[in-house]
Length: 355
Image 1: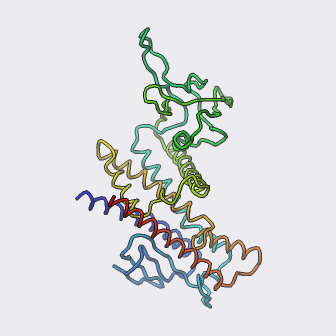
Image 2: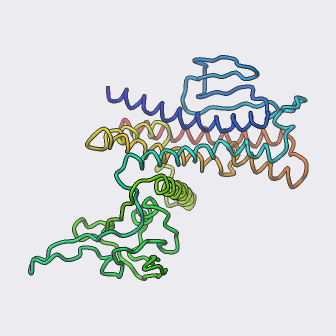
Image 3: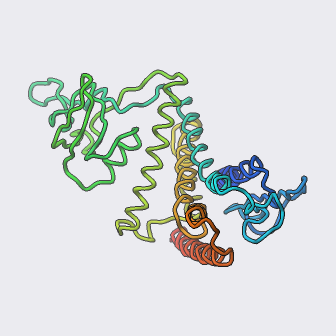
């Protein structure tokens, strides 16, 4: 029963993320009066479909993709409402709209998540870990960062020159580095100061997180402000992960596809002592996935939106489009490579499942 519930949750998450992405392309195309021939959620055989006006809408069997097919997008057309007939800036906004909608969805879900919390987080140190001196019985600090010079009330702005937007940035920086000490820039009494070196170590837990941050009261300003910062932090985290993947820090074995993601969703859905905490856990994962989809689609990889945007930039510079046959071939090769990668990762996920 639990596996069925997890699968349903995964379908809802994938469907929402794919749907909002394709809806971004769709709604901006409609705003620019571009003819949309097909709007589909999912891939493969059609489960449901209907025609409304010029557009066929369909729900397909496999929730691993979707598409918004526009007139004159991949072939020549004499239709005045064809994609290729519109101004370059209009086509650029259509191409970018899907990824932007994924990032906006992440922003909105972060705001929703904050509304379920008692306080809005910050990067201001509220207190350090403490322990009791075995000899004197006095309460003393258990935080190496306090002994290094950080103080209660310090607002952490940057670590090793990397800007800290939210606690997402902070935790990622501390948990994914092999460094023993850091250069930390804080705002203290209205002034920026840099403390170097700073070592983070909690004597109680032996972990790096040796302090707690202040929570702000919830209101529209604090919620939306932090949601924006955390969206940027999540996008930055994904970008840094991609760089580390390319640089060789991570390998193909560290990647997960749809099957592996379902397994992670099952873990998230069972994390927490009550329903609210489990919902928060699933929301956190959904935020990461949708921002990931947005950022990844902006990369100039053939077959992705980022690559289509690059072709439009080249057209703007050359003042004439690249022949559609050549562009289509580039996108076909890119999509074939991405599908091959997905197959390899899926096989890897399935093998992990049986192991």
